[in-house]
Length: 227
Picture 1 (tube, one colour):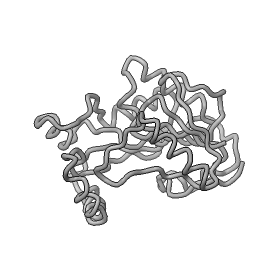
Picture 2 (spheres, helix red, strand yellow; picture 1 turned 120 degrees about the horizontal axis):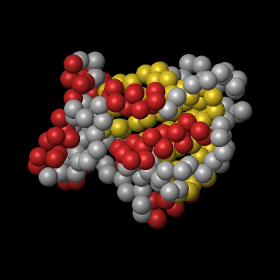
Picture 3 (cartoon, rainbow, N blue to C red; picture 1 turned 120 degrees about the vertical axis):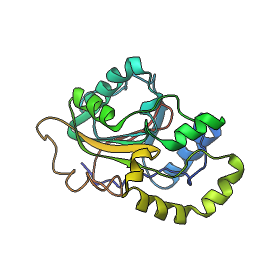
């Protein structure tokens, strides 16, 4: 395969992103292609991932698992496992924590919140059941995430300070009531690709080598892939 740097698509802390809007999709497509990335952008049915077995070195699920219906979650995870190469990496980001104090507060005062929350050990158990080996699982985003839109500009301005505070908080017991869970797991089995994955498991997408990357975004039926 070829060495590929991760495409980090993110918004400032506190901003809300609606990927259903066609204009957003067009802007993203234009930006990625304009910067020289050969990225395909498409939708799927939210359960069956339309690629052959062992297609990807890396699958990234960003704010996805909580939007997958529980009655099909096991099947969806098996689909992720299917399209990953042996020893391929599965990254999960922004999975809302069952014990999140910010989710609790948002629900109580009528701000946007998630209907489905997960305990860390539950996510690990689900992945183990479909033949993933969880290499690392940790809490993230200990500060309140759901705030009125009028405060977003201030939050974005203070983002560097807030990030520093969050980095300190996740090293304390406060992390157990943080907003999100993130983890990285490997598809179990004998390694059948060259050693692209060494040194990746603890870097959480800062930079990794891979030939094929599948990026599942906020809505569970949207994906991009680099081939």
